[in-house]
Length: 304
Image 1 (cartoon, one colour):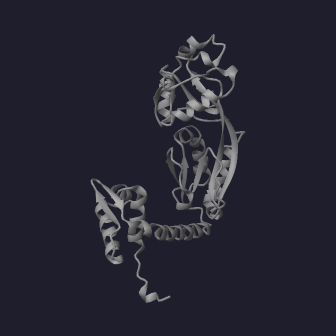
Image 2 (tube, helix red, strand yellow):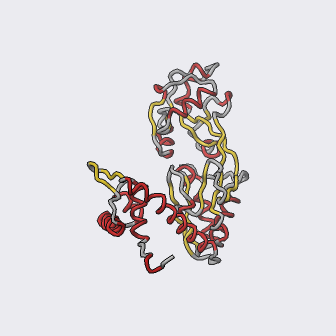
Image 3 (tube, rainbow, N blue to C red):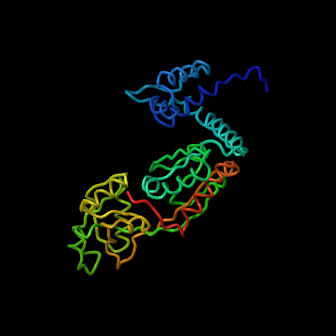
């Protein structure tokens, strides 16, 4: 290998890869904490350096050329190697001072994490926390987070996962809203039930109908990816919503809907971390404390 002939700018390659992943220069700039003109110049410089056109502009969007598509897998391999190097370096740290990033859904972050965060701050005051609240799954291999709370077990071999508990998920409503359904003898009688759900409501309908309901799209009266908004809509007597038993039971205005028919679903709670980062002292301390406080015997949550 001739090192003198190797003069590849990683920042330009990264700008290209993130633009491909995010679909636009503006979205890539936001992801990298940069600006659209800067990203545009980096991609243009990469095209000049390689002597090929990587993107074609179609209307307001960018489309990969054949050359660009062929380059993606090579730059992705570079990105994976860079991520692995960063993980290895971070994993060697035995310093309790520094940042730990935790990824969690909105309902978990608001109801389960405040007491844990207070305990971490009290026990390890030199650790700074960044709580990323999102319905999307954080890519731990890409360092989008150090630790994540998930409702499914990861399959990647380089991730460490600790199952904390199984949560029963009930449909909750107010007594005022559920009064008209007090005397039903079968779930198939709920033709006028209003459900406040998520964007992917078809899966919810399939799940409920597999449990004995007979519902259709008309029963999905409204939807939102924000569970806190769902919570408030249920409190306004507009329908029923899905919430974990641990959280829903602590709201005085809520009752379990159709309890005699059983919980519609059970969802696990997993604590996940990359294997390399688990050797990082501050990440390990936060991981262990989260695991201890959010395990089955931890009943205290903060309702919205």
